[in-house]
Image: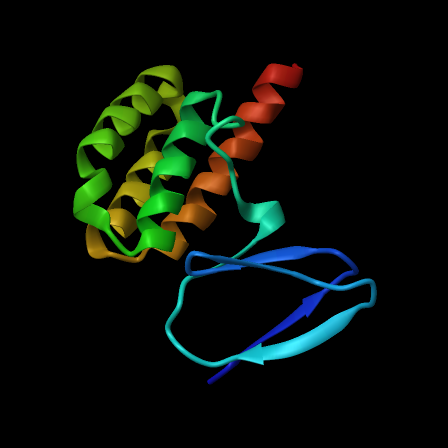
Length: 126
């Protein structure tokens, strides 16, 4: 079943290794296929990956967008270890994200890690 995507003016979406930038008007389209898809607001860049959660997210994001888990596995395990040390109270969510990565459900892992990013932001703000 195709995915319906609605983009605001000048909003970006990443489909595989391609970035699509919307024109000046709101638009809607259907995507049919198996390519990895992320909205720009759900991406982390190498420059903004400046916390343990964001570094792990960026690594899983690259696994997902490049469709290449083995290439990033060593980095991932290091970031996972760092995250466990920095957020010991979030073990359950970290383990859930890791289970998704292990099973190849990378988009689900990204969703779980986004929850951790919110928790991390709340801790910094407090």
